[in-house]
Structures are given as C-alpha cells and as structure tokens.
Length: 290
Image 1: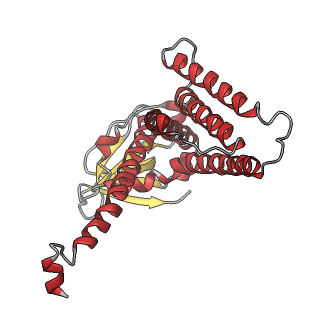
Image 2 (image 1 turned 180 degrees about the vertical axis):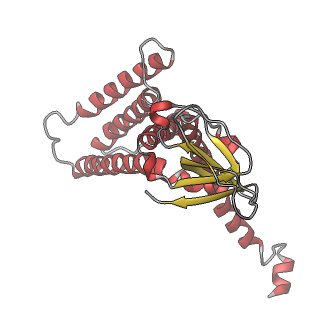
C-alpha cells in the first residue's frame, strides 16, 4: 500500500491537509468577524463612559464572546429572509416546471420585485453620498437588499418559464453582486454592533445599581468631584494600619488584567470620570451586590 502511494506521487496525509485547510479557512474568517464585531460593540459601550476599548485590554476571546449579543438579531433576520426567499424560489420553480398556464399576474411579479430592488439600490447610493439623511444602517441595507431583490426577481422570471438560472453571460455580474452584498452585510452588522453597544451603555448608565457596589480603602486621599463619592477618614486609634481613607458610592464598570474600572453610582446625573484602580495591595476593595 505504501509502495503504491509512493509510486503514484501522493502522500497518505495529503487528503487530511486539504480537508484541514478547507475547514480552517472559513473558521478563521468567522473568528475574525466575531473579533471585529465584538470590538465594535465593546468600543461603543465603553466610549459612552469616556473609556477607550483599547485601554481596557480585553483578550481576543473576550471580544469574540461579546460579539454574540450583537449578532443574534442580524443573523436571525438574515435567516428568516433567506428562508422566505427559498420558499418563493421553489414555488416559482414548481410553477414553471408544471407546464400549466401561470396564474394571472405571476409573470409581472418578478419585474416588480426587480424594480423595487433597483429603487432601493438607488436610494442606498444616494444616502451614502448624503443626498438624504440616511441612518447608520440604512445605506448598507438598502444597497445590499436592493441588489438581492434585483437578482431574485431575475431568477424568478427564469424559473417561471422553466429555464435555468444563472446563465453563463451573467456569472461575472453575479460575482460582483455577491461581493457588494457581502460588503453591505459586513457594513450593516458593524453599524448594528455599534448601535447595540451605545444602547447598552445608555441603559447601564441609568441602571448602575445592576453592577456590583465597591468600597475602596486607600492609604492616600483620592479626589472626586463634589457629592459623587462618600469619603470617610478611617480612625487612627489602636494598632497602626496602612489604609487611612474609605470611599463608597462606586460601581464596578469592568475588571481587566488586574485593573478595576470604577464609576460613581450617580454617574448618569452628575457625569464625571472613571477611576482606574490596581487590583493589588495598594488598595483594599470590598464588593457587595445591590
């Protein structure tokens, strides 16, 4: 067996390499997308509090996990639309292969779909050039959705007559359309991740009681804007102790790489900054819920 493999110039592990490369390529691409969308969501979330996501230093795994919440709605919506399109496509193919007269108006329906798609595409392009005030997701959704409807209407017109689609002369155009639709999807999901992060940040700012309450004891005095944090001087009687000041009224915003990002619990009303505290012996920290 080994001799025949050697004589034929093939290696026993050749197929395994090809299989692994086939699986690894899309896996790497999907992982990169999760990382990118997770960073977009995280950056929008913490930017609301004046913190750059790069300052936090989350790991790639944490960014990928954070992308899940931002992808549920786009992925679910895309799958529902795809399912509806597949059902309509197969219904048109069944009608076309049946050989019986088509229902009234069915021949006109594909052209109406393509016309609607063309209008959406033009609106998306105009929105991209700021001819009208388009939202962050409006332009990519109109461009991508319009192109999909144009091609879908074209495919329906062929299937209703029993012809095969795509035809050879349109394959290059379809490849370009697929690239534009993929770019539009990437653009739209990125915009949704940013919006989702900003919405989550506004909700968290109004409900900071959901985050753990933090009491910090320090050896040196810290300075906060008036009436944001409660400061208490610890008693100096008895055995000498390292910590002299206690600060209450703080909430844990994030804990990353041995650093705690603390925020006043009334931040939504008074504003202010975020305090970065090392999680080591320089301070004494106590947590409580509620």
